[in-house]
Image 1 (tube, rainbow, N blue to C red):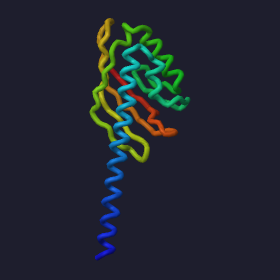
Image 2 (cartoon, helix red, strand yellow):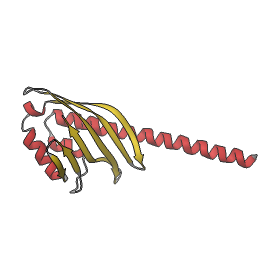
Image 3 (tube, rainbow, N blue to C red):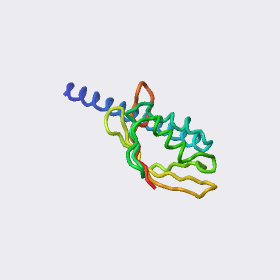
Image 4 (cartoon, helix red, strand yellow):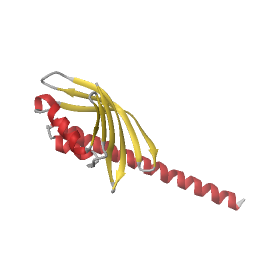
Length: 144
């Protein structure tokens, strides 16, 4: 009986720790998204890209197909949103944030751009991975 109680206590504590870690992970990821909203809304595309993995293996899939790499993704953003009038004010609406496996989550939601050149809205699914202690987007699929 003592062994059974001991095992039950270990399982309970492990479950509490896992839930706390997942809650902390989600809070940290949400913070990255909030920083991205702020940077984008200031037409600071380099600041917005700080949320992405700065690596040639970054994947972005959008209306123009697959883009590989951090720099190419930034270049595409600069081309598509050259001025504050084009970038506007960004707001994310998060629909789901779920753990995929240890140190990785997917985030599904919608983006809303309020702009002088006309508002734009769309949906996205991004994958975050904890790399060197920081949460980074390693894959992004966005569409209007």
